[in-house]
Image (tube, rainbow, N blue to C red; front, side, top):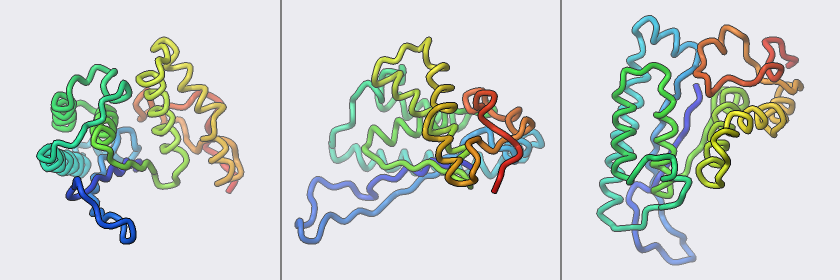
Length: 214
């Protein structure tokens, strides 16, 4: 399953060790799980989505607890267009929206990843995205985030959002990554699998195949 591993300092500090030793950093890792993974979707249809729900709930609480400690230090919170322009409001409001998304009964709620990413970015956290192969679902997630950043940070017209997203998936480096891994410049998806994906995670026609050369 695609997981965005968001890491932030366990105990953020205004001071650091000497340059010779370097600063000491203890990570707080949270792993929110996205919607759309085939087995997770089937499990949800059977009423067996408890594991994913509990994982996202635990990840939210860890992130909220970290923010509670972070806020006590009065460190600056990133306040750029890419964090706030999507209508998330203040940091507190954004964290509340994440809480509501995590507790929501909505199926395939892509807001969990989007909001978790924005919250982590606002606290200067590090983030990594990967699925099992690191190329297919990862490609869908990365290109979606890139397009969101272009819209929020660089004034890409929202009317161009979908076209830009499809261009990144059909012409961008994600297909080159597939080729380097499996000698085939296509994503490895089959139609039934894609029928379970949220719309934002579906690649354009002609960019995927269920038959790949390994």
